[in-house]
Image (tube, rainbow, N blue to C red; front, side):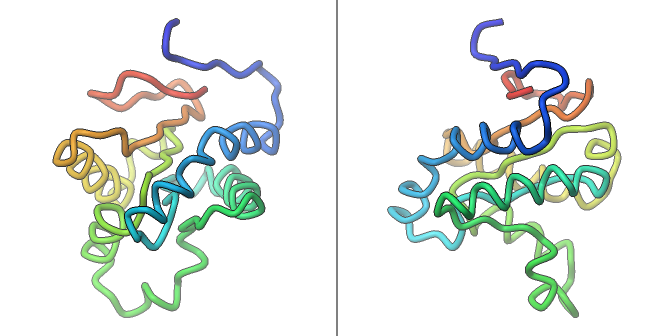
Amino acid sequence: MRGRTRLRAGVSQTDKASRIGTATTEARSVGQKRDLEFDVLLSFAGPERDYARAIHDIATANGLRVFLDEEFQHEIWGENLVEYLDRSYRERGAYVLVLISTAYRERAFTRVERRAAFDRMIQEASAYLLPVKVDESWLDSHVYCLH
């Protein structure tokens, strides 16, 4: 399928994350040019946390500034979580990397993150959302994805 990259079945989480880290290296320069806090914000459901951690580790090892929620609990504590997530995924980064899964589609807080990212993508008319399929789930209105 044109515009879609497929990874072999049985590829390890670390290998997938390495390929994603390589594919998003340009985020570093985009984030710095726009004076943003993060190059990439990770959006995922709890069951995909291991994937998110692997992506985070590889991306940060390659010099990217990555938002992973568990590293910012000190900021989140006591905040209105919906407002915090909306502001973060709308304003704080160059890209949002979304790990699409059945759990991601069903969770309330991932819906907040996704809507903020979609709103920004529409407002700026630019590629902002980087989708990665973890299972056979899909998000309505999104065409291409790394799988």
